[in-house]
Amino acid sequence: MNYRKFGKHDFTTSEIGFGAWAIGGGWGAQDDNESLAALNHALDLGCNFIDTAAGYGNGRSERLIGQVLRERQAAGKTEPVFVATKTPPADGEWPPSPYCRADERYSEFYLRENIAERLEALGTDKIDLLQLHTWTRAWNRNPTPFKILREIQAEGKVGLIGISTPEHDQNSVIDLMRGGLIDSVQVIYNLFEQEPAAELLDVAAECGVGVIVRVAFDEGALTGKFTSDTTFADDDFRSRYFAGDRIERTVKRVEAIKEDITGSGLTMAQIALKFVLAHPAVSLVIPGMRNVAQAEANCGVSNLPDLEPELLDQLRRHNWRRAFWYGGK
Figure 1: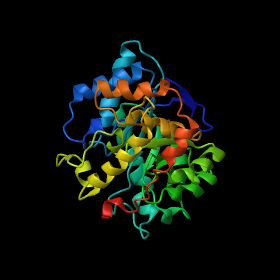
Figure 2: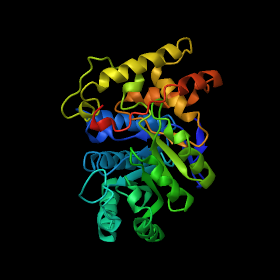
Figure 3: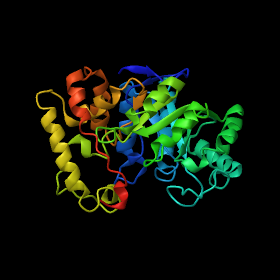
Figure 4: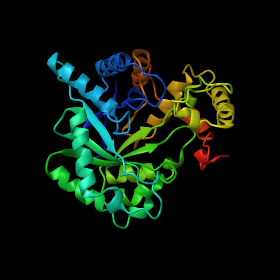
C-alpha cells in the first residue's frame, strides 16, 4: 500500500480507503460477518482510512466499524486507523434548496445531538473527521455551521472538519476552501465525472485541503461488469440511480473505455482507481468493499504502476457531462 499526505494536515493516508456505505445497507442484502471480514482484511493490507456516515444503515456501518477497531485493539493490533463519518442536514429537502437556511438545517442543537450519536455508534470519544453530508451554495455567505463545528473541535470531540459535496454543484465548496473553513472535501471524481479537474482539485491543493474521492466506479458501472440487461433489487439504491435507459447508455460508454484500455494489462476497475489517483491533489479514493475479495482487489491497486501519460490523455475524452442524471435524460 502506498500513502499520501492528507492535505496540509498531520496525517498520512493510504491511497485506498474503505468506503463503508454498502456494509450499512442500501446496496441489497449484506451479511455483517462478510462486512467484518472485509474491514479486517483491508486493514491488514495497509488501509488506514475508513469513510462512513450516519445514513449508512442508520448507524449500522458505524457500529460495525467500532466493533472491528475495538476487537483489533484487544488483539494487540494497534495500527492507527483514521475514521471519517458524516452528519446529514436536519429533516427537509434533499438536496437543500436555495431557500433552506443553514441555521435550521445545521443548528447548534442539532449538530451537537447528531455528533453525540456518531460518537456513541462508533464507540469513541473523538471523531477523526466529521463531514457535513451535503451543502448548498446558498449557505456560503453565512456558513455558521462551521463556526459551531470549530467550537466542538476545540472541545476535543472532533478532529478535522469537511464537506461531502453536493453532486450537482461540487464547485460550491471552492470559496469555503479558500476561506479556510474546511479541512477536507469529499468529491465525486471518476472517468465520467471529470469536472473537479477544472478547478476544484487545484484549489484544494493550493489551500492544503485533503481530498477524498467517492464514486470512482460510478456506482459499479466503471468496473465493467454491467450489461444493458443488468437489474437491481428494490432495496438497492442503484435501481433508482440506473433507472430508465440510464444503464444502457452507461454500458455503451463503458464499452468505449474498454477499447481504449485494450493491451494495458489492467482491468476496468483497476483503470478506474488509477485514473483517480493520477491527479496529484487526490489524497485517497474510497471504493466500497463488501467482502474479502473486493478488499483484496481494491487495496491491491495501490501497488500497480501509474498509468502512462498517453493512456491518461485517451481516458480524459470519456468526460461525460450528464447534468441532472437523477431527473431524467
